[in-house]
Image 1: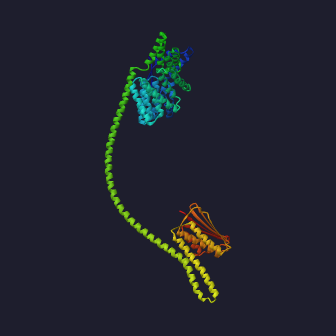
Image 2: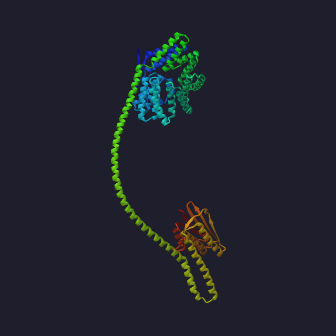
Image 3: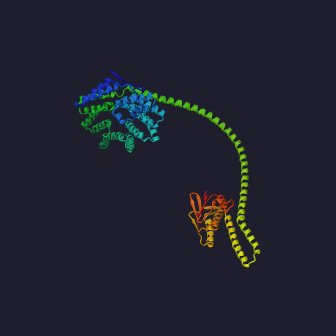
Length: 619
C-alpha cells in the first residue's frame, strides 16, 4: 500500500493510493465505454498532480488574496485542486506572518478538506482559523467559521455542532451580519432536521431564503431551495418539492461549476425514489456517479451507491444490489473511522483547553491591572486633593486681585465718562461759538453802527437786514438744538433738514437748480453728532458754491454701498485751487467734522466744477 505525503503548514496529510486506485477502477466501470479512457486519463492526472505537490516558490501577498477570493462554487467543483491551492496559501501566509490571509486560507482549506472527507484536518484548520480571527478581532469571520465548524460536525457530535452554530448565530445577529446569517440559518436548519425537528428546520430554511433573495445571492438561493425540497419530501409533498427543485435547476444551470447540478441530480433521484419510480430514481443516482468531478465528493458518492443498492434489492436484482452495497462500503469507510473521530474530539478538547487557559491568563492580567489601577487611582485622588487646596488658595488670591482690578476699572470708566461729558460740552460750546456766537456778535456790531448813519432810509434798510440776519441766526440755533436733542437720529431726518435748506436756497437764488437724490431704501441710524456734522458740512458746501462759484446746478447723491453710507456733492461752477486752502478755512473745518463723525472726506475741484465725497462706515 503506497501513501503519498503532502506537506502543509501545521501538519501533514496522507492519501491512500491503493484506495484511490480502487475508486478509480469502480468509477471507470460505471462510465459508458466511449468515456472511460478520458475519465481514466483525467483521474490519473489528478493523482499525479497531488502526488508531486512541491513547496516551490511561495505565493506573494497579492496571490494569497487572489486565491482566497475564489468562490465556494469553485471549491465545490474542484476539491482536490482546492486542497493543494489553499495548503500552499496557508504555508505562504505563515512564512510571511500574514495572519489575515492565513486565516482566510485556513477557512477555505477546512471547507475543501471537509468536502474531501478529511474531517480531522478540516477541524484542525477551522480551530486554527478561529484562533487567528479572534486575535485579529474579526467577529464576522468568527461567526462564519463557528457556523461552518458546527455544520461539519453534524454527523459526529450533533449537540456540539448546534452549540458551535448557535455561538456563530449570536455574533451575526448581534452585529447584523446578514450575509453570514443566511448561511448560518441554512445550516442551523440542517441540524434541526437531523434532530427530527422539521418545523424548526423549515423555519430557518425560509429565513435563509428570504435573506438570500433580498441580496440576489444566485449561488446561495438554490442551497436553501434544495433544503426546503428535502422537507417537502419528508412530508410526501411531491408537487411542492418538484416545483422548488425546478426553480433550483434554473439557478444551478447558470453556474460554472458542476457541484450544483450534481447535487440537484441526487435530489431528483430522491424525489423519484420516494414516489416509487425506481427506474427514474436509479437513472439519476447513476447519472450523479458518472458526472465529472463527483468522485471528489465521497459522501454523496457513498449515498448514491447505497440508494442504488436499495433500488436493485427492491427490483430483486441481488447481484447489482450486492455490488453497489460493496461500493457504498468502500466510500463510507473512507469517510469516518474511529481514529478520525477520536482525533477530532482531542482537537476540540485542546481548543477548549487553550481558550480556558487564555481566559485564565486574561483574568489574571485583568486582576493585576485592576490592582495597578487602584494604586494609580489612590495616587490620583491624593494629587487631586492637594491640587484642589492649591487651587482654592490661588482662587482666593485671584478674587482679591480681580476686586482690585474692578475698582480700578470703575475709576477709569468714571474718568472716561467725565471726559466724554467734558468733550460734549466743549463740542456744544464750539458749535454755539462758531455759529450763533459769531452771528450775534455781527448783529451787535451792526446795531452799534446804526447810530452813525444819518439817512433814515439807510437806517431802515440796515434794520431790515438785521431782522433777516436775526431770523437766520435763530434758524441756525434751532438746527443745532434739533441735532443735539436726540442721542440717535436717522438718515431720513437728515434728508428732511437738507431739503429745507434746499428750499431756502432756491427761494433766494431762483436761477440755481438744486437736486437731492436719495437711493437708500432702508432706515439708517445716525448719532446726534453725525446729524449735526453732516448737516453743517453740506450747509457750508451750499454757501461756498453760492459765494465763490457761478454754478447753475447742484446735486447731492446719497447711496448705500455694501456697509458704507456714500454722500457725493457736485456743482458745475468754476472750481478753485486746492493749494490755496488755508488751515482753519471752511473746507478744513468740513473735513474735521467728517472725521469726528467716523467718515472719510475727499474733495476735488476743476474749472468744470467741484466734487465733495463723504464715506461713513455703518458698522
